[in-house]
Length: 75
Length: 138
Image 1 (cartoon, rainbow over the protein chains, first blue to last red):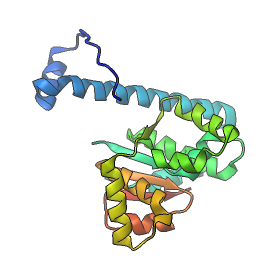
Image 2 (image 1 turned 135 degrees about the horizontal axis):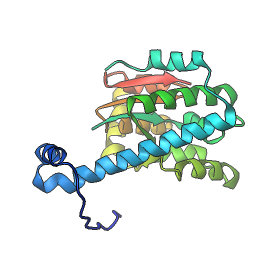
Image 3 (image 1 turned 120 degrees about the vertical axis):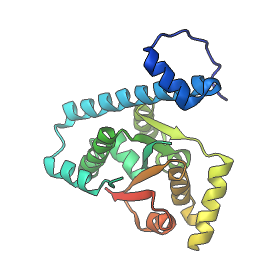
């Protein structure tokens, strides 16, 4: 079941708000902003998770990082 | 939709149990790190949890990782399940490969996706027709 929605009043730079409305449409703005916030929270959580693994296990060997970057598809 | 890194059971275990997975954990961390650099979302198809949640000792480590919010479980919807069935049919594979099919069907929810897996043989058969899906072996 989806979470109940909570109405928020937020401020953002006018140009950013205009770009968001243009991209999402007036009626889709809440969904657009919700996805963006969820994504940012996920990204922060992932960064923190990787940081903690590094603190516990040590840095990822350079060769492994290079391999992963090489194999990751170029889009 | 965005790019995603899809974790199979081996990849999830490698991140959830870093003390016991050795080289697999190193590779899984490297792949997750590159996903972070590229802005990709980390996803675990819900059926994968059936492979890794095998008792409280195993479940606890998985729950700790999933509860952090960095890796999100993608629910198995009717659309994904039916797509998985079509993938199995096309690849002439049996229901024994159902979880692999759910993994590939979940990857198809995204514009582009990378699947991190300990064994890519069956996944590569299922994903073969789709250029937007890439496989990375741990």
